[in-house]
Length: 311
Image (cartoon, rainbow, N blue to C red; front, side):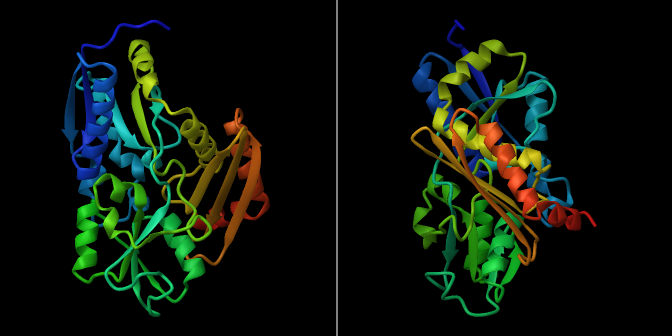
């Protein structure tokens, strides 16, 4: 598809420091591709940013971080929005599309603590904070002697709570810490055998209106095909199981040559029940691989775990 280089673009973004970094990163990428384009940011406060005293699962999920940005796309105040892929609902509203998925940063979870260099060295009863049911589930399964407690707020707020002594440790996304120049806070990155990442973790997604074919062609230049294949497979697991942030679900794909390996799990919030899958297939069929992984999870008891969550 041929297209004209854009003359002006506006990026809708949340106002948190990490979201602003992500939007500025995409702005810089666009300016490298289209140096004469005027690229502006439209910082916004979303409902998800305002509800800090409750868990996301109890108030509608991570889509609360996205709705206001989509309104800005719909009414023409912005042309595109930048999201962490792990925060994006698996099904976008009618009229919206993912125009590009960018190259992934470190997808692992990170152990951050002022008390200890490892999880194993923390004492029984240590309070470990996480905003993710997925992380909490896996931590509880492996370390039942810890107290797993929710922690909300932006990254700086969470780290302050750690430094103030409210928590012995936090489990955070390594990508966010790295992007904000806080990699020194990471004691170590958790191997996927300990904490399997969320679908899309570490990757950025660029959303725009489906009808904007001109813009979609422009944004396609930001796509990183290997990352996009992995993320598509991961999100297919989530979609097949009706996944959102109220479900402790992990899905992580890795590309090796022409083969895609996809590991996934579903667990009960207390970590006492876990269903796992590990499948491989050709890289050109990521959605089919995701469907296979979901079928394996169901065969391993995922349906029963998910049904118990709804009661």
